[in-house]
Amino acid sequence: MKSLAELKAIRDRAKASLDLRKENPNAARVLVGMATCGIAAGARPVLNAFTEEIQKRGLTDSITVTQTGCIGICQYEPVVEVEIPGEEKVTYVKMTPEKVARVVNDHLVNKNVVTEYTIGGYTK
Image (cartoon, rainbow, N blue to C red; front, side, top):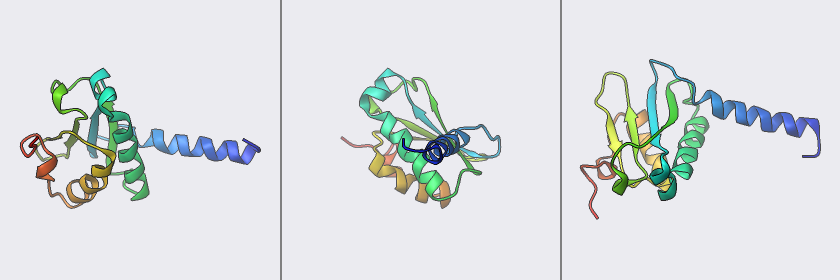
């Protein structure tokens, strides 16, 4: 850091990221499994990709991104659950940062589940 302005810019980016994690009962929720198994499988980059994609698209008022503990299906980590009010919860498995943009666009924005990324659509 070379200036106070640069420090403020870092603070503002961190604050925006934290605001994305605030609970809103009317918002869709993206829960990323961040237990030890999830972190070891690469859940942290997936969580970061969701927060970045949602911020980039200006969806922070309608989508909350948060982390959760063990979801219980460790062999399918990283696991992400998407909860949209009034709809059934969807569990995505073997998530990668590269898959995030499609889940945000197709599922969260256009309400079309990306079935090939779900536990029911997963094939080895």
